[in-house]
Amino acid sequence: MARRPSTARKTLSEANLAALGGDRLAALLIEVANGDLKRRLRMELAAEVGAPDLALELDKRLTTLAASRARVSWRKRPELIADLQMLRRMIVGRLAPMDAKLAFDRLAAWFDLYPSLTARVKDPKGELTLVFDGATADLASLASAVGPDVAAPVLTEALSARLSEWASWVGRGAAALSPAVAKRLLADLTRGRPRPTGRLALVVRKLADRAGDIDAWVLAIPDDDRRKPDVAAGIARRLAEAGRAEEARAALEASRTESPPASRWGRARAVEPAPLPESWHAAEIAVLEAEGKTARAEEARWTLFGRTLSDDTLRTLLAGLPDFEDVIALDRAFALAGAHVDPMKGLAFLMTWPAHREAAAMILARREEIRGSFDDLPLWAARLAGRYPDAALLLVRARAEALVRLGDGMTDEVEGLIGEAETHAVAAGEDSEIHAAFIKGLRSLAATKRPGWR
Image 1: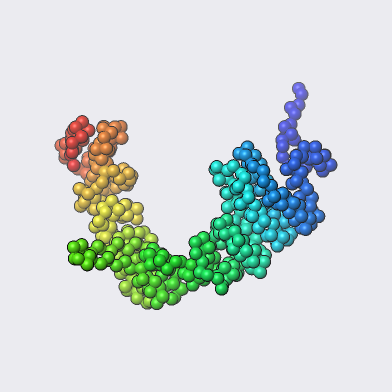
Image 2: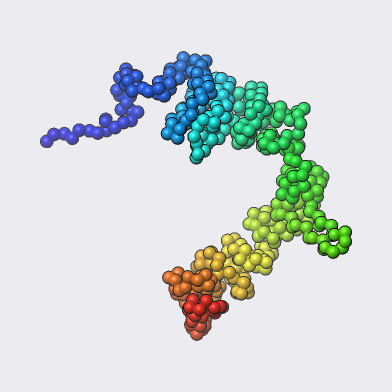
């Protein structure tokens, strides 16, 4: 019997190609190479010679792309994008390890191709933009590698002359810059210059974040914006965290909204000021702590929790409490949730924490306020069914009635909820006549669209 030929050696893989030998592979490459492949091969050969030779080959291609005015159709766009990606990989992957400065200069030239390309490339899906936006991490990495003396002048010139494009790229990459480069670039953009505005102000703020310069960050915010509660909250929080409590308090108080004055004729009542956002109240807590007013900060945190029912706020409150006091604090938190003005928000907190006993008590106490349209009701009912079937029963019935009121009638989902309700009713020891009345009212509601059993 003839032996079956092995297919492993015919599989297209690096190992099998290497087995062909260098001479055979070189001949094949020369035979099949088109323009793009030949260009890549020349660059790879130049890289073997040295960094200056690779830089020269890269410059040739960058110059050609920059000088071209030919329109690029949607059919040719993938080829162009592949060419751009190849150039970036050669700069970052091959040239940068040999000479970071040469690579940084070529990458800056690569980014500068973008404006002319957008004018001649048909790109309705924004694929070209994504190529350049996706390279900002490489830009930041190379800028950090060459250091502030080399990177800062190049980036400053680019931002000064071509702000509309470079603001986005530097802003995106700012968080990955080394603090030294960010600090130097920040100084070059602000020292002896007018106060930054518009896109430049956004870049300055991101650089100030990376450099840890709070004053530069604040300076880049327009005066009118500083009086907005959300913005003032951000400023105050940063200042408080830096230990500058007095300035933090001033920033916060400057944003307090005041009631508009009444009409001079006395015919119009004064309008109540808009409520301050939660971010403002959270910032005030940070300011109170920076001022050393610990007790007031804790009470303010309780007030904030009472409005937001935030898990994070409660965990912060509990973190600093000694044993047994955290139990008392939890009871207080559960009571606030149970009495919250929005019953579904309060119930969601208790179910998520979890505090099922308190959630069940709240459902029984506020049964008339349960909104059956809330999508989590069936899940909550399943969680409560084992120990609190009476609460689960109320949730299931509220859900079934809400679905019928929406106008879908006695759907399979509603029929399933009726079956669940019967199970919970038996477990809760409810009189069977009550459940029968519920079903009768539900079917009547489905038929007549009039309010049914509740």
